[in-house]
Length: 244
Image (cartoon, rainbow, N blue to C red):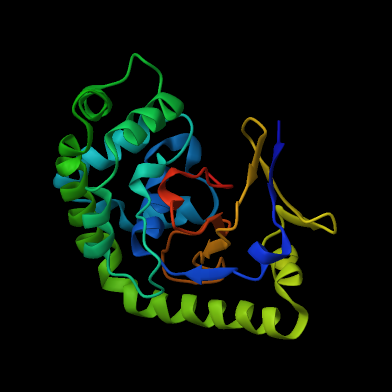
């Protein structure tokens, strides 16, 4: 059953809408298909295309994602304001996650009877994420990096298209057209239909950042997702995202 996540977006926040392109978020979203129940649509196509190239060193990351019934823990989503980010920068950012935030996210995303790859960060915090980060680096190197230049070019064109909509019709119109599951209300509320508990969030003056997905029409195997919308930094790492 689908429920709605809601974010109240005052005009000051709406004016601060921005975009980013994240190789790490593309990698994480595609890798959710390690769970066969998520192996549908664009994620499933990407997974089938790269399955034979997945290195054994990627196991800690894939085990962490496969064990989560509630999607990607927020501490794996790098906290960066840069539009052009490298995977190395993003992975370094993951290692600076706050220990308390890691435990909070693990409690949210996982059951208490979780495998060791979940329990170690629960007990040890960020220092236990090094094997997961190394696994993500190996998976990126083998499965995403060879195609990233072409994918980035496509993503950049999408960002430019959305930016043009902001210029011509305003940010509210852009948000309303961003994805079929997103809806904009004149009351200043952005809603997202998603199969998870209801969530309400206020941006508190931080603005909104959209991480551009790989479009569905890209022919080469590539991860894709609804646009990922989150409060922009300063403290975005500790703010809930509207999509999981």
